[in-house]
Image (cartoon, rainbow, N blue to C red; front, side):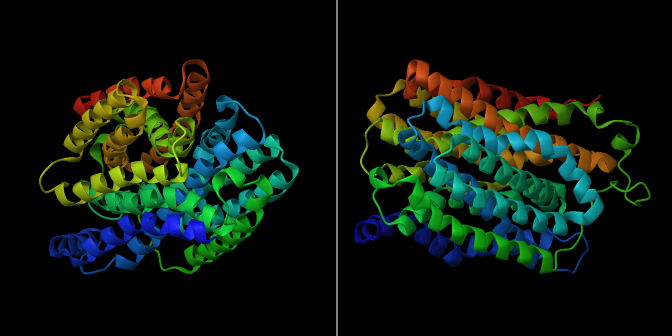
Amino acid sequence: MTYMYKMAKPLLSPKINLLIFVTRNNKINKLIQTMVKNSSPSQGKSYLIPLVIVGVMFFAIGFALGINSYLIPLLKSTLNLSSLESYLVLAATFGAFVIFGYPASLVIGKIGYKRTMALSFLMFAVGFYLFIPSASMESLPLFLLASFISGMGNTFLQASVNPYITILGPIESAATRMSFMGIANKLAWPIAPLFLSLVIGKEVEDVTLADTSFPFYIIIGVFLLLGLLALMAKLPEVKAAGEDEDSEEACPYAETKTSVFQFPHLLLGVLALFLYVGVETISLGTLVDYAETLKLPNAEIYAWVAPIGMVIGYICGAILIPKYISQATALRVCAISAIFGSLMVVMVPEAYSIYFIAFMALGCSLMWPALWPLAMKDLGKFTKAGSSLMVIAIVGGAVIPTVYGGMKDLWGAQDAYWICVPCFLYILYYGLKGHKIRS
């Protein structure tokens, strides 16, 4: 345990330094005040508390997904799995988005955003509980079922918080709000394996599946408390312009449509989000596994490579969007950065390639906050239906990493990252032209 504490201490310092920088920097403080002011649908009403609460939920999403980056190499070594088989854990987690993406939007329509958020944490708790017998039985099918159920909770929570934060204020500043949410989300990814390592108190190579039971009991308790917080919190129910049939705010473009499938910019955005989630999951979820493949010491330390790049990108986005650059421009710049990073990962010597994943992650940082408002713009009464399609697209986190695992088995870990290049090229196309297409 003493060894883990000494190892963890320097890991936490970048986050602490970032927090000190943010709190002491007057420009960022003014930016946060402006974001809160611009996040109010009605003038004179502060939405700071809803933003903080939703930020905690974005952190919970990242933490739940970050658990996979610890489990994948553990399952691979303990159960003697191939890379393709071990990445089925991610496939099960993200596969839930296909089945429950649309039903989640129907539930939101019936019970509202806040109750859906609370329901999602209950689903998380059930999924995490199943990890405990999965570990004791060393059963891959049971692990996949537990991952699928926690993925179902993730689906309902994503379907709630993403459109909620997008329409909690002007659409032009949505990327700014999403950037702050992204910082909370991406910092949680490496904190999850760090938390598991600290609680277990063993070096990674000595950990068994049975050792993970106690940490999951703690996680279950925390997520149940978050569900109560969501249920009791004073979160206002918000709606996009023209979302209601009798709304005074009309959306002329959407009024002429009879189906959500008549919005080309949305459908192209759904594909862009599908590819983006896949490559972002690769950049965040493969670091520990890749470090172990390269036989680097203290492999869990490298889980911070991607989140640091993403946090830098989110801070830049919060400062620059929309005052200095548009959401579409940010998407184009990020796509170019990600293309550069992915090419360097596969072309430089192995010993240095892992660090260029930070450039991939930097590129991914503003893709999520830019893609959502660009794809959701002008949907009017189809906002919830469009949101459900976007949530279904998150299944890219199941498909693309699984293909990566198969490519790793065939051609090696470094060459498997070639899959990222065409994905980022399409996202660049969407930022250049795809989001402008209207029928």
